[in-house]
Amino acid sequence: MRKSKRRHNVADKKRESPKVSIPEIPPATLYKYMTEARIEVISNRKIRFTQPHLLNDPFEVKPVFRDLFSKSDFEDVVKAGLEKIIRETGVLDLDNPRDEKKYHEAMRAIENKIRGGDDALFTMMNDASPRLEESFRRQTEKKIAILSLTEDRNNLLMWSHYANQHFGFVVGFRSDHRFINCTISDSDEMRRPRRVIYRNDRPRITNRALSMEPDLLFDTLYLTKSIEWSYEKEWRVVMPSEDRVDVKPQKGGDVLLYDAPHDAISEIVIGARASKEFCVKLAYMMRDTPSLHHVRLYKAATSYERYGLDFFEVRYSLSPEAMNYDLFSPRRKNPIRQAAQRYSHVF
Image 1 (tube, rainbow, N blue to C red):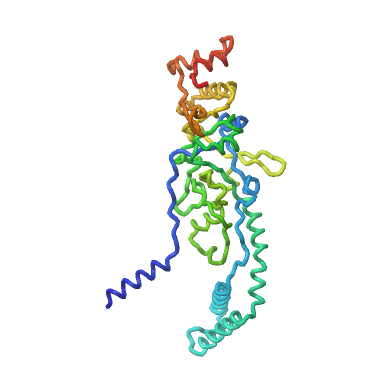
Image 2: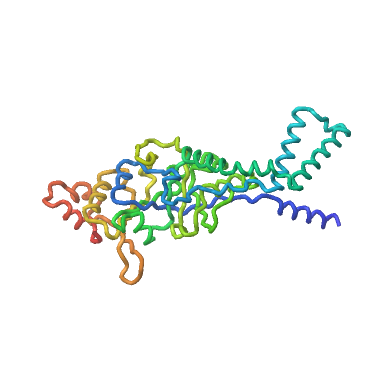
C-alpha cells in the first residue's frame, strides 16, 4: 500500500508542477531580408532593431489584460494580502489559539463576501486592467527593440515583401554569434534567438499568467503572433533599447541601431531580379573588405519548373590572389561589365 501511495503522490506532483519552457536550438543560420538600400548594414556594420509599435503588425506585443483576476484568484490575493498585514503588524498572534480563531473567521467572512456577490472591490481591480495594459505598452515601447529573422531564405512572399520584389538581398547570420546570441545567464530572457509562436487568439494576461515561469511569460508577451504570419517562420531577438550603439531620429519613431559585426555573417544571397550594378557594388565591397572574405555569396534565380528559387554560389573565375588585384581593376574601360563577366556566369 505504501508503495502505491508513493507513486500516487509523485503523479500528483507532476500534474501540479508548472510547465517549463525548454530553449529551442535555432538553425545554424538565420536570415534577414533587405532592400538594396540596406546594403549600408554591411558597409556600416550596424542593423536596426525595431520598437514593437513601429513593426508592420498592429497587434505586435499587445496581449489582452482584460479580466486580470478571476474570483478565485481575487480571493487568494486578498487573503494572502490580509495574512501578510496581520503578520507584519502583529494585530493578531497567529500562534495564539484565540487569535488564530479570529483570523479564520475573518478569512471565512472574506470568502462569503466575494462568493456572495459583493464584488465591488473585485470589479474595481479588474477595471484597472486597461490602465495596466496601457502602462505595459508604454514601458515596452521604451525598453525593448526587436530584430526579426527567419530560418528560410527561399520564401517567395518574403522576397517580395521585404526584399523589394526580389531586387534586394538576404543576409545570413550565425545564430551562435554574440551579435544575436549573447545570453548572460540561463535565466536571461533576452539576447538570444527565440522562435515565434503562432496562434489564432491574442495572448491573455491573468493573475495566474503573471506568476508563470519567466520563460513562458516572456514567450506570451513578446513572441506571440497571429497564425496568419506563420509563413515567415520567424525567429526573434529582443534586446534592451539601452544597448543600442546609435540612434537616428525619424518622424514617427527613432531608428535604433545595434552592432552587426562582419564575423556574424556567414552568407549573402542576391535577389533574382537584382540589377548588375547592385551585384557588382556588393561584390566590390566584399572584395575590398578583408573581414568579409569568409562570407559565401549566392545569387538567386527563378526556377524553370516550379514556383521557387535556385541558388548558385558565386565564385571568382580567377585565383583569390589575382582577384584582389585584377578582377575589379579601375584601369579597365568598363569595370562593371568586365567584373560581371569575370565574377561569375550567374550575373
